Length: 126
Image 1 (cartoon, rainbow, N blue to C red):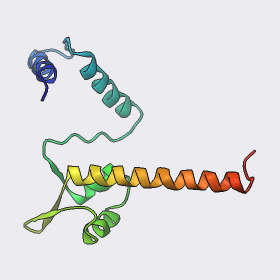
Image 2 (image 1 turned 90 degrees about the vertical axis):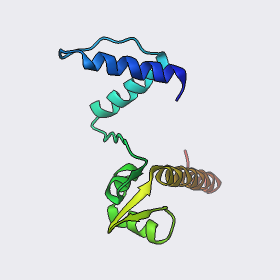
Image 3 (image 1 turned 180 degrees about the vertical axis):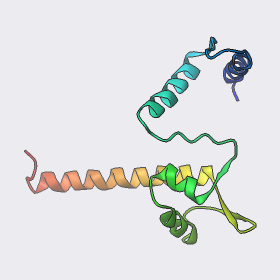
């Protein structure tokens, strides 16, 4: 963790230890931008997942990826998503979920570019 982030984290925790419904704290611009993104997402009704662990359940992974839990299980069975078992429960590293999301984003962007090129070649655009 960077020194600035460590300082901002300490300042936020200190402010939250005070009583009252509102807090006042000075943080770096980068931390303020991150907080604004989180607040914007919540205000728009998007799910914001905060993790204290490095792993998620298949249901949480499904939410993060915007797909169904059975689809996540298929990806696990195909070894596309890494996982481990904890007793009878499955845990997926967040890094594996993020890597899958990045690969899918790249694959979709490439497919959309090919589709746009084909559309242009066929003269289907105005």
